[in-house]
Image 1 (spheres, protein in one colour):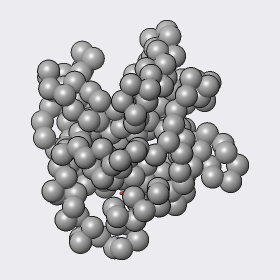
Image 2 (image 1 turned 90 degrees about the horizontal axis):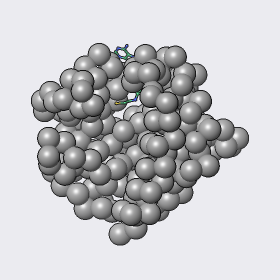
Image 3 (image 1 turned 180 degrees about the horizontal axis):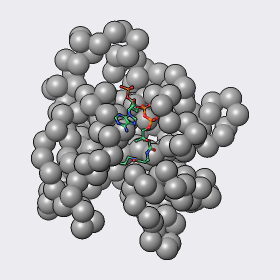
Image 4 (image 1 turned 135 degrees about the vertical axis):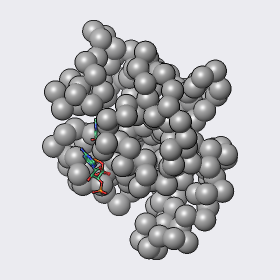
Length: 192
Ligand SMILES: CC(C)(COP(=O)(O)OP(=O)(O)OC[C@H]1O[C@@H](n2cnc3c(N)ncnc32)[C@H](O)[C@@H]1OP(=O)(O)O)[C@@H](O)C(=O)NCCC(=O)NCCS
């Protein structure tokens, strides 16, 4: 089943990330509040990442989206799924980042939920991981709100990270415990 390249969720317009999104991505990644959460980017690191994210779509047929305001088209942030190797094992990872002026509006949670729904329904993966530095409380909270649970700590890029995981069976029963307005099924339907 094809992974959507461009679609609207309740608050976001999500579009397959392209090399042309680099300036917006750089603006976000170089903001002091973002570097505080993720660390100072090495010179050229952001450009390499955007290049890799664009290439990921070409190679795997899914990936990250740039998230924009549906009315103005203004860049808000980005995120989505990508393949990752963690302690030698292949994984599907969800990640996200937004410009600080848009934090606290539920955008990252909305994007994470939609990405997870797409991963389970369209890619047919059995589980999805997410990870963050232990003191990145906002990111850990987004994982929890998207249904992920703590698995373990692991070393990534030379730093200790916490790994969270969501299995498809747990995700399937989650809508029964949530208000209908937040159901996973709705997230997938919106994207069709
Ligand atoms: C992490 C990030 C994407 C969250 O984006 P967001 O759109 O603000 O996320 P949401 O609004 O969906 O949810 C944020 C949640 O974290 C909570 N939160 C924010 N800061 C917090 C803190 N310091 N301690 C505890 N909780 C915090 C919010 O209250 C909210 O939870 P709630 O809905 O229960 O109140 C954003 O902070 C960001 O871009 N950070 C820099 C990049 C980054 O760290 N990305 C993740 C890499 S692993």
